[in-house]
Length: 396
Image 1 (tube, rainbow, N blue to C red):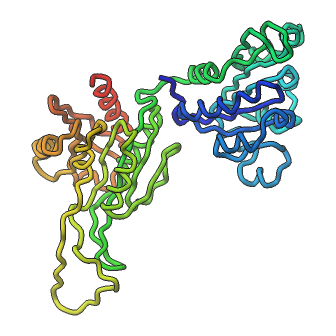
Image 2 (tube, one colour):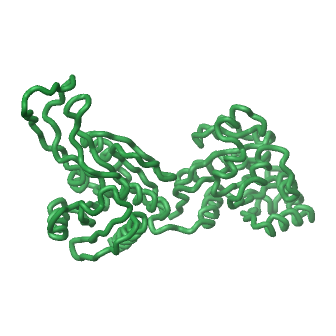
C-alpha cells in the first residue's frame, strides 16, 4: 500500500499543459497521507487556477515572492524548510534550465534553492526539446546534485508529436514519491490514542481527577508518527506540547473523551487507551461554588462510561490496547483487565513509580503471552510497545 503518511510535500507547478494533471496529483498525494502545499509560477496559472489548487490542497497557494500577506502566514524560506519533498510537476525545459543554473528569480525557484528537502522533477515538454543537448546537460547537472528525475513518459503530445516528453501520470508520481521514503513499522495505519487525566466537575471551581502527566500517551503519539502512522491524540488537561504531525483533540471530562473517541473509530486500525479516566463523576454539578459550611460534605458519585470497553464492543473494532496502572498484584490485575474488557494487548505498570516520571517499566500482556519490557525513558519504551503492536498486527 502506498503511504506518504505525515510527509510534507511542496508541489511546484510550472507553465506546461500537463499542469492540469496537478489537480488529480494533489488529491492522490493527500489520499496517500501527505500534507500538500502548492507553489506556482506565473505561467502555471495560465493552465490551472490557484483557486482550484487551494480548494484541493486546503492551503493557500504561494504565487509571488513579494506577497506580503503570504509571507506573513508562512514565508517562502519557512515553507522551504517545512517540506520533506519538493515535487516539481510539470517541470518545463525552461524551469529545469533555470534551477540547473541556480537561479532564484521567482517563488518556486527560490524555494528550490533554499530547501534541504529531497527534490524530485517530473519533466514535461515537446519531444524535440527533450532531445536537445541543453536539456540533457541541465538534467545531468540536477542528477549530480542529488535531484530525482521522474520520467518522462513517451506518447502523443499536445502539439501532435509522438515521443518522449509527456509528464508521468499522477498515480505514477505518487508511487515514485512514496519510494523516496522508508516505510515505518506502522506505515499507513490510523492510530487513536487517549492520554492525560479527565476532570469531573463538582462545581465551577472544583473537580475530581486522577494523577496523570500524559507523558506516556504523548511519547506513544510521537513514536507512532515516526513509525509512519497517522495519529489522533485525544487528550485530557496536560501541560505538554503536541508532537509534530499529531492531530490533537482536547477534552476535559470522560463523557467528552468517549464522544471524541467514538467519532474517530470508523477508520481506526489501533486504539491505545492510556488516559487516566475518572471512574466516577458527581451525580449533580452545582451551578455556583459550594460554600464551606458544615464539617462534612457528601457528594453522590455515579459511574463514568468505560471508554476502552465501549471501543472493544464495537462491531468493527480496531486492535485495542489498554494500560493498567496498579499499586499491587500488577500482573494478575492486568491479566484480569485484559480478559474482562476483551482487549488485544495490555501494558501493566506500577502506578506509584511512574507518576510524572520520564521513565517507566511495564509488563506486556496478551491472551497468550507475557513479557517484561526493560525500564527506560518513556519514548524508548513507547518504541518497544509499538514494535509489539506492529508484530501483533502482522500476525492477525
